[in-house]
Image (cartoon, rainbow, N blue to C red; front, side):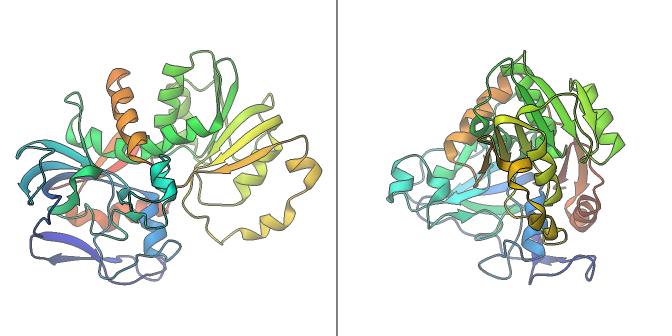
Length: 342
């Protein structure tokens, strides 16, 4: 099978094409695993974090990709949840131990044995992959393969981010960064909380225009001051400066939810600029998003089919994965980028 493979970590500016196109054997499913023939895989900023070593893979070589859609073509012994031919999706959570207190309490995303698709096990930048059947999801018929792919991470992690804000109807919500996750969050909020006013902070004029098209009441640059203080803000950027800007814009008792698996070091000097009275006083909160649970993905797929949420996508061939990643690194974003297998 064809696969785009990462063999070691790189600084993208040093190596423009970090992934190699290789021919690999089609994997064999184990006892409770299924073999999936992949049709589409979303491209996520987390892949940049893997490539550049902020969340490095636990093994090399590895096939990245954790927003995977395809069909079951083979089942291992004892795998009986899906039939051959069923369309399934795979998200960031590849497996967890299933027995620790976190798993037993529904917080499997915090399990010490958490394994990530495309980081700790081969993912979806390939023609085939295997996955434990308990960590695969039925895809609602309303979505095409390319529409469904971004829902498995950008949408699901956005869904979890909204839950962690404790947002209530009639409040105000800020979105800092407006890529694949941000535009899906806006659609969810407009559906679930019709009286919430959404304010979007983004560097790109095109992203700001896109946010207004989707129903934002105000847009501005990351450093712009909105016309009112905000009850909640979700930050989806890889940088530190937006964190400080967001804290300045929070209402007393407001909450900032940081939806990023890692922050880059390029502007970490902003951490030294935190001013307690300006940024944190009056019971402001900061909460991070750590991965997703299976429940998050299942609930979100159901919600997305009801709304329905149809993400904006840009399609690339598998062989163009490096191009998609380079554009993501450069901030050339409108909606979500998806690899399509030929």
